[in-house]
Length: 202
Image 1 (tube, helix red, strand yellow):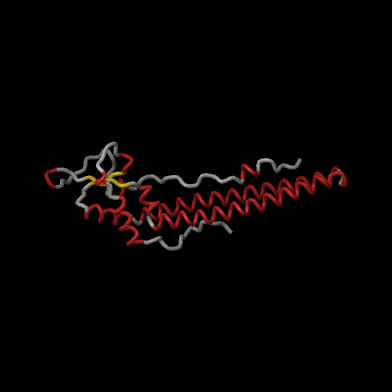
Image 2 (cartoon, helix red, strand yellow):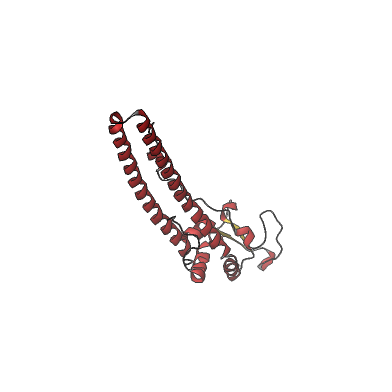
């Protein structure tokens, strides 16, 4: 039997971007819950917070990654539409020829079509997964480049402790150094240049 049902669901856009684990604790060598030594003025620790997701998304690096994913996604969706059109036309053609073919010939043609359709599904799924892997790879590259920069920004603001904003229940707006960190990272690494792990499969 011909099996093209489900193409629309399969070829539909899938969610790609998901936040990577926060690197803030590793940046300064401590984890939440640990005792941290060192005191600021007045004998108190000066704490700063950072929003890792906004840090990545708001940087030139993160904006480039998002633009590459968007471009590759549009190209993939266009390719999906074209392939679906071709497979649908082939299915209609086989259906029209069914009465003119022997049972054996039709079964062979239908099996060949099923193999072709499954190959298309698999190839397109691999290309979609490639976009997920691309973003994960670029996130790792971004955050591996930022520890020393974050350390410098923290020190320039007189801070001793940097924690993930998601761990803060109540905090003053001035504790957030995300904007300063984005500016420093943009100055230091820009958009990161060409990715070593391309977004699109050939």
